[in-house]
Length: 121
Image 1: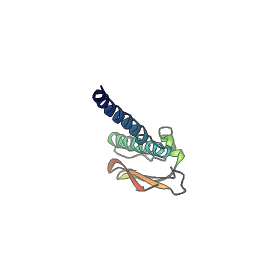
Image 2 (image 1 turned 30 degrees about the horizontal axis):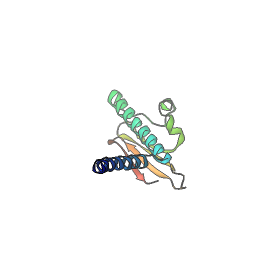
Image 3 (image 1 turned 180 degrees about the vertical axis):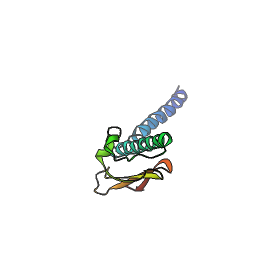
Image 4 (image 1 turned 120 degrees about the vertical axis):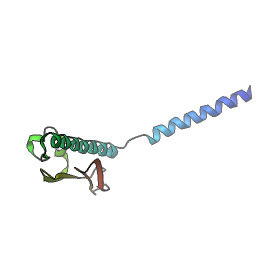
């Protein structure tokens, strides 16, 4: 009976420790959640620009008020826009997501569908 109990206790302890580890290390901080939202918004912008270029042969100005309804997240951050209708675009977002007083910077441009963290927050 004690041998059987040992074989049950070991997997039970491992399962409990595994559950605690998953709960502890899979939690997302508020700053990480904000960064995920910011990167999703930048990827949305990239896809909109790529689609607009494929249809019209030019890139639109991301800071144009006509497109603000589709990109409401841009109102929340300090943004630098570089735009050339034929050659491309670049959007740099400056934000202090973790509240430490130092702003980070994220960039997306026409060259690749990936957000680049230019400066760590």
